[in-house]
Length: 127
Image (cartoon, rainbow, N blue to C red):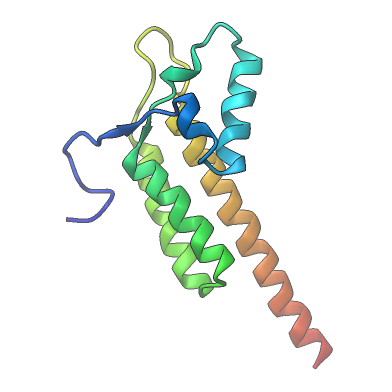
């Protein structure tokens, strides 16, 4: 059983004001943008599953430590699997904060991979 195959409900992390200062700038910005779009939304109700938070943190570590592109490609596959699971609020069909976070992670990986591939191809052109 892998990280994305676990059928059991995942524990959530709630970004209480005490925890927001410990969160990464991207996550705090995403919370802020969500509040700009829906100012009546209570910031305490942005639960993030441990799986999504782990995928985000794992991505950040892989990019900062310059892991091989294949490692990030595997993480991108995990993110795609996690995003396929429908996770909408019951009151509306809007995606949850967790889905927005997974979309952010996927975008960060894609941008990083494109930049790495571009760097590799430019090195071959120089030779």
